[in-house]
Image (tube, rainbow, N blue to C red; front, side, top):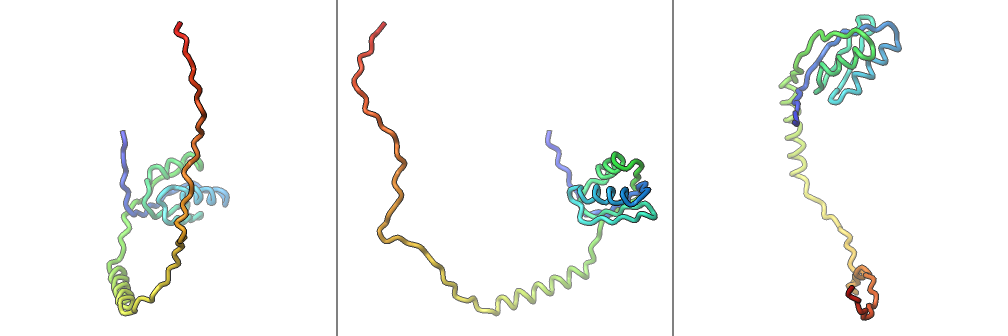
Length: 139
């Protein structure tokens, strides 16, 4: 049975016990190695990992528990992009498109190799053996 999971852009904060710098680095590497993670930040003083991306929070927490010990999911929230930024980006894209349309395309030269002799590679060589007439004895 094939099951397909659909994840959306989310921000998760996970509490992990980190005793030293080595544990902090290990927690960061585990978070970054998860598929779909866009960014991860670790606060050693508070023992928090903040991860952003399209990933499974439960799988990440289980991996952290396996490697580091105690780990709890504190918050999971959708990442909402600001619409104003999108509008500004769209305006800039439209301006760029207009500039591209205004520019006349430059003629491009294309080098085509053509052999006037019409030489083609030979067909594959098949081995042919002469067959003598054999009399098959029934028996």
